[in-house]
Amino acid sequence: MEKRERILYDRETITERIRELAAQLDAHYEGREILVVGLLRGAFVFCADLVREMQSKVEVDFMSTSSYGNDEVSSGDVQILGGLRADVKDRDVLIVDDIIDTGRTLMTVTRAIETMGPRSVKSVVMLDKPSRREVDFSADWTGFTIDDVFIVGYGLNYGPYYRNKPYIYTYEED
Ligand code: 5GP
Ligand code: MG
Image (cartoon, rainbow, N blue to C red):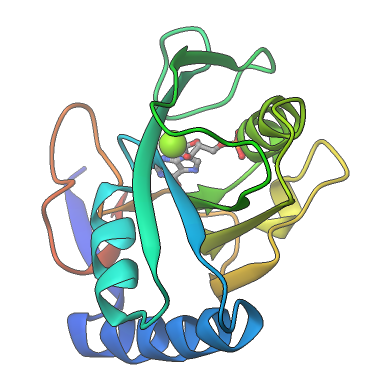
């Protein structure tokens, strides 16, 4: 059987939603500086687009996580691989990720940053699959809420590829 692309959110729809999120974030953090922490590798596209729509003063840093070497499914034990260069103490930290699935990645990273003495820690994700949640955790801002389907594009991978596709799609057998 052949696999086919089915576009869920095209480039324009994504851009529009990111403008709305950026406006909400600017309003929330009004007058404050934000330490944006993007989670590699999946969030690199969303993070780049989001910060460019924001008016707030931001410092951008990245962290890398893995769940037993498999990039597609969280296995439960999330490890933080790449540390931050930025000083977190007394900062307003905004974690940016591509998608929240089981919730383990965002929860683990949030807890780790909380130990570093920040003023606040919040998170924003492009996509949320609430039906897959295994821990009691949710992002503070969400782009789109979706069903339990495997997503590719806009930072999300299929094997090592397609993170660069500028739209969000499913890639499944018909
Ligand atoms: P969680 O720890 O919430 O289960 O997983 C979050 C990570 O799993 C995401 O940052 C992403 O790397 C990966 N992931 C979860 N769902 C999908 C999906 O539908 N497609 C792809 N490509 N990666 C996913
Ligand atoms: Mg990820």
